[in-house]
Image (tube, rainbow, N blue to C red):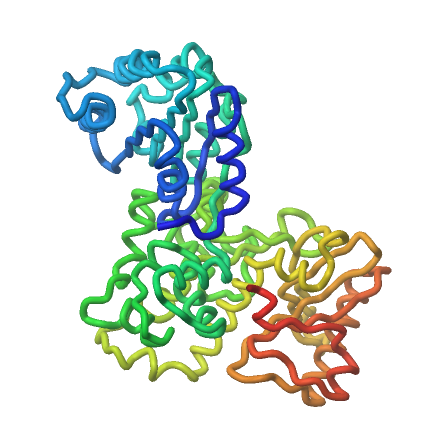
Length: 480
């Protein structure tokens, strides 16, 4: 199967392959996002390829046995060797074998799920430090890759390492993100699944752009049927995925799950202070900040600055599609029926979930939004905005889902709305949008010109009211 998308990542890998020096590259990202697939597929026919994967809960002795098996299969035609006693001996075995090859042949070493290989007291990182600095870095034909799903571990122990591996990575770490909407459409098409963009969008709201989940999609089914198959059938593949996913990443995920569950019921997000105030078990001084960082680095939550405010006022929101879907529709559901999903579509709960999921998709496709608004040169970054009225002042809370601050003395306020048909402004909605724009200018004190952009799931019908208040609009086509 060919690699779909990942153009920037493939360019970096090709540059590393073409370089005339040893390369040491880290890759991290959400579990199931396709890190191992990317490395395997890209390098499978580009030299001698050696891959060993860590396994959660496996002892050091067993990890070393696995290393020896892979070593034998790769270099010794399966002839069994004595298992090294420690990682120093394992790397030494590998070093001597690599020195047998001429410098004209590329050698790719891939250590997958590094956090499990380099468990506490395993001695793996110390051995890696020694052998990279003393031997591997001197082999111009060697390309070394280390991957992991535990983002915080990868950042602290490898990418931002302050000990022996300090600044040893040869290129910026690859943070592999989910497939985009267009990449998802192409990925499905490569599997023989042909869907129009609206069907892809509906599926993406439940699964996100996770290749391993998309592999479960069968041709000839609508997005609603696919979601029913994967979550609500007696043999559903993803019914138990939620807890398995968090457990495999975080070991004891109780506090992580509490954060995720809190955010699932707050579409506008929560600040760190609000999260800790609402939590029963998490406090800032009790590892709460670390938990947020772990969830963020693993791409489950997204931290968005609040326009005009300090960093501490940034809002967190649940950005992982499967987590949001599971907590809204699968958790606590007693009876599973293929007709369940079709029955709830159109309900008020469905509209609220779909609005949250669609907003997430827009935030994840910020670059596409900027590009389609022709703001690529002037856009300075994404933010959100919230107005909380004082008690008794007669005003209501206002939120702007996406604020695009610009270097040309302008600001775009992006109002993101999910509807099941083309949206048409009425006098009330026109008045609300106009009021929101004026309130933003008054409360922020900005001197910049403010433009109102509407991003709607089925577009907005143009009318006199539309032209009175809307400066631009985008439909989901702009996200592809």
